[in-house]
Amino acid sequence: MRPDIRVRFAPSPTGYLHIGGARTALFNWLFARHHGGTFVLRIEDTDLKRNTEEAAAAIYEGLRWLELNWDEGPHVGGKFGPYFQSERTEIYERYLKKLQDDGHIFEDQGALRFRSPREHVVVDDLVCGKIDFDLTNPGTHPDMTVRRPDGSWIFHFVNVIDDIEMKISHVIRGEDHLSNTPKHIELYRALGATPPRFAHIPLILNHDGSKMSKRDEGARVAAYIEQGYVPDAVRNYLCLLGWSPKDNREKIDIEEVVKLFELEKINRRNAAFDRDKCFWLNGQYIAQMSLDRFVELAKPFLRQAGIIAPVGGRDSVEPTKSIDGSAERRPTDEGYLRAVLAIVKEKIKLLSELPEWTSYFFTEDYEFDPAAAEKVFGKSEAATRLSALREEFRKIDNWNAGPIESTLKALVQKLDCKTGDLVHPARVAVSGRSVGPSLYHMLEVMGKERVLTRFERATAKFSKLPGVSF
RNA sequence: GGCGCGUUCGUCUAGUGGUUAGGACACAGCCCUCUCAAGGCUGGUGCACGGGUUCGACUCCCGUACGCGCUGCCA
Image 1 (tube, rainbow, N blue to C red):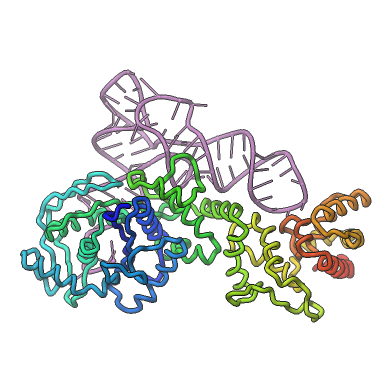
Image 2: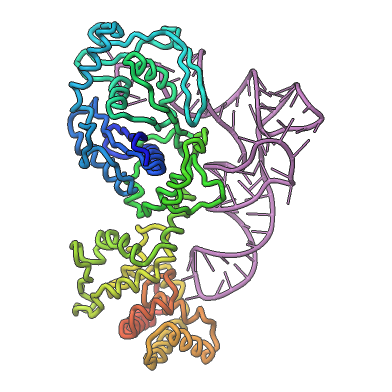
């Protein structure tokens, strides 16, 4: 434990959490956890006093989703609060008074400015190394404003004061602040405070190298939540942007990263966000996670799609009307849901793909993809073969993938056709789609009765009007 | 413009004076196969450029180019 190590993530409540901000938060969190220090969340709402809580909600949501829990800050408190800058005015007044008394402040048309000592300032950065800034020229480095005429505060000033007050030991932030750092150090010195250690981490850019702005797709953490990314995967990917375990591992547990993480090992170059790799990593996480975890993550997406009941607590599958108007008989238990999810788990890369991959398991009113129907049932033998397959399936007593497969294969021999000649019609018949999970497992999960019913219906549907488009 | 940071396959990276420059994603081909994936195998593409230093530079130094950031009474 290193109680002296205190870091903070200090976002402005803009109404969303930027992916770059998320990584800054992540690196702060990793550093704190690595050393057993404290991770503080501070909301820098100097500018916008209204709707702060609302705008900050997206930040909380993003951080919680990534499981970057803060030790001090909004909701959890702490002995260095308040953690909203809008509530710290007296503190800033006090520091301003001190600077004024010491002659560091002068008025400029109503605004207050800090008079620079006009010296060289060396920033000894943990990531970038020692950098010498020449602040002697007022033309290139004007005295910074600390308070506007209307009394509102400027970021540089309150940021430094809060870091002093909150006893921040290491400032880990985006490289866009590197050039501001010498100014901040001047402030620390004028206040007689020891500056914290600084670590400026590289920025995240778009894939084409341009700066990622809030408008860019993928800039908001919320977008990943909506698209069905797994938090562990996104967090893992973010770890790899500017940091590396150096042993060629890509998928790496967060506990392991906490163990290995060091600021000195962070890259200095900006990194482009590679959506493909993040997507791939997400698939890896889904394929390798436990079924329990997958079910837990899948439920919100299934609820939203109306596939399972939108109630909290119980996720029973509600009967809906089938095509002929009678109430469907289908399993309403968790077991069926788990069985369905188990066979699509290794197939999907995003949780948002779940509805299209699972809806037909839960309703008789599933759509038939016209292209798939045309391709498979365009051949006149398809319906006949499906009918024959139904007859063979009808005889199966132990309805499991094994017997289902051997029965189908036996019929292939008998009819002297290819496996696909039976598999494809069967797949389209029960799902309406040409792609899906392993057929035999899918049929097993659906249950014999349901499969036979669907086969029958599809046979009728596709043998009636040969040649007519579906 | 000034100041600062950066520059290894398309992208993320390993590499710190002597390597056939390694891995991953993406891409192409093959295998597997009931579809789609997954998995396996194979392949191509890289040290921005120019000077130094050195027996020897991807590795060190200087310059150029390019990229990014800062240069606000934004954060």
